[in-house]
Image (cartoon, rainbow, N blue to C red):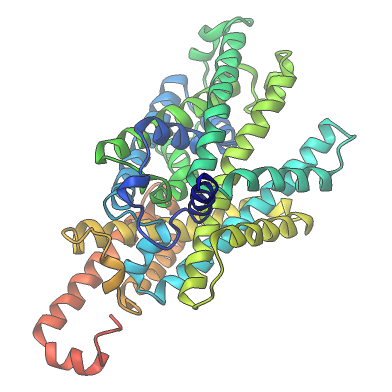
Length: 443
């Protein structure tokens, strides 16, 4: 009997409620939420942000930019995350409600493929770096080993990521604090950092924009994690912990490194401090945190798309297919396209977040329940139109700090306006609309 129960539990963990709301019995504690969220937000991208902020601002400006930027991300993530908590739906099931059952097919496939392309490029980039550091490890070996490693956690969904983060997060925080301690004990210490003046100032607004752009995509998909929350306040606390404590602290360390030694490359900085081994551990753990969350999100996207197409393929299989796509991209040698993938993600994900926020908090704020899937239309044209329009506007206008922020705002504004206009039209001509849509299936 126990074997049967264990088998059923394993099957549930593998499928991870990819096609249904997370029931109350499967919700997780606040501690689990915080651990997973911090683990997700500790990323190699923090070191890139540190290079930008540390090289172009004073210490005070840099710290303020990191704090303000991450607080903005907390607000966005909380709005998206509360949708996940209240509905129990993953980002892609929520997309069904917003874009329609078949409209969400486009969203799922696009975001899933781009996420795996990003991971493939990431693996290609760092396999080359590892090979230079340790010539005995060929790039292909790192790609295969790393792909297999992240699959072992992502395939088990939330539980797999929680178990890995419970081990990785304390180690990463300890190494980060060690790095700060060593920098403080060096020549000049923090006094030199505080007195640092940038050679080429970028300004406070640009620094805030850099912080927000780096994690706006993660904020857009945070519902994949927060759907496991027990209480709404747990979502807000976990988002704060993830972005301010997780991403923010490591962006601060990278910024201090850039100001202290003129380099935000964590590996090189740690090597200069005589801490190469801890740096290698940090690098692997941070990459793992980033990659397995992307792999998990992509598997949910593909599972949702295949279900719409009436293909009976479970999430575990899609996890394996997704990592295969990433490995093939890595073997294609697209490391030079890393920034291209970042720009593509920054173009399509923020408008998606804006449209989702507009739907659940402006147009249908009283309709957050698990039964939303049953009433979702086939296609919600105004949502798709707003998504595309917001992406185009963010690409070709320069109104706010960055394209990513513009995409979020444009998505929210465009869909709110289109949604209200369509609703007003329906109220004024209900008979004509009913006749035009047949069974009211396309909206």
